Amino acid sequence: MSDNYSKVLLEESEMPTQWYNVIPDLPTPPPPPLHPGTLEPIGPDDLAPLFPMALIMQEVSTDSYIDIPGEVLDVYRLWRPSPLLRARRLEKALDTPAKIFLKYEGVSPAGSHKPNTAVPQAFYNAQEGVKRLTTETGAGQWGSALAFATAQFGLDCEVWQVRASYDQKPYRKTMMELWGATLHASPSNLTEAGRAILATDPDSPGSLGIAISEAVEQAAQSEETRYALGSVLNHVLLHQTIIGEEALLQLAKVGETPDLLVGCTGGGSNFGGLSFPFLREKLAGRMDPVIRCVEPAACPSLSRGEYRYDFGDTGQLTPLVKMHTLGHTFIPDPIHAGGLRYHGMAPLVSHIYNLGLVEAEAIHQTECFAAALQFARSEGIVPAPEPTHAIAAAIREALRCKETGEEKVILTALCGHGHMDMAAYEKYLAGELVDYEFPEAAIAEAMANVPVIN
Image 1 (cartoon, one colour):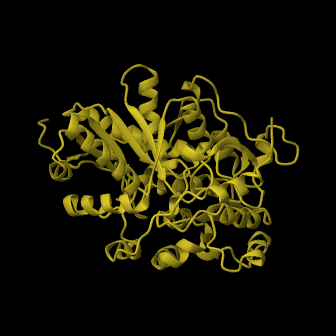
Image 2 (cartoon, rainbow, N blue to C red):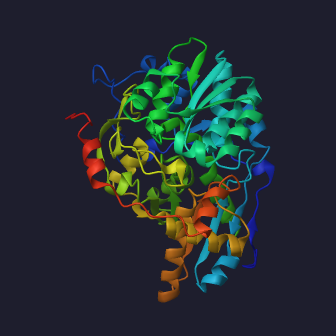
């Protein structure tokens, strides 16, 4: 193929039929989750009240590849394989010799990468007789994806959305309800966890940690209900690797290899989904890209957090996992990248970062929205606020290439469109969007609540 291309497609028959598990290829395995009561490593039975056994087995699997069920592939085919775009107009606007590629996940029914794991989670729960799933959501991408997925397999869905995003993105509620879900703003008066937060702060903007507590509390009260998580856990990142596997095939079609891979990083699923197959190739010596996590400066768990055992939720209902954390009681400022407002990073991404296999940087939201504006005006796609972090990082690198003359290949995941985020763009265009300083005092206070585990 000539160099004059703007989109790289795969045939439906070329869609990968296995997910990739990076754990067997790592130099050392990640530390195990611990039971919050005994502080001993948890076993499958400890997770059974929350997840179906098929997902629990994937969570602890040592197999490098796991077959994707045919029923899941059938739903995937509604939008997969997703396109790999070359941002030629952006390259021209930047006057850079770099090539910028974007794996575009905004073509899914929910408009993001989240259905890649929502669909298999709904499928495995339905296979084991579960009737209802509860979950949390930040910006609403995950809640929308799970609502879509549960509709495919006849499950009820109940969602707790972080209050700040619930108020900022009202049409996400409508989208979830169209697919049959029930939605609550979090913190809510429906759970003990929510009521405890409201008692101390009636105007709490909420956090993913709080919303997780509410969803987990509800799931634990019914034999027919289980909990679904949209990021952080190993099986979630596993399902997302179809992104990277497709991207590898697409780049091979045009004879390109990335020099730099950047991904926005909140809980870690989008980043892991894109990067893990490329990390496999790097560890095997077949390519050598720099792999960089990009997170919001107001909530930089990797670049400013501590690598410690901590709870995944504010109410301390979840197992303790070793991750880069800002403290489970930390409530991030209400930045518009709601899907990145999480106090911790996926244990697997944290472990890989701790091994020195990936880098991390943090960017303020005004630079991200400026990058989004330039991207939208050159490429026509309005990105969700979350991937604007990766776009900003890609533009930084492309401008460095302009200065040095390097012809780097830059790859990122455009993990969702921003059609539901017009309020954020309206504020940016009106000059009302502000950057939040990293709250050192608030982090210190939250970290004081993190358990000390040797």
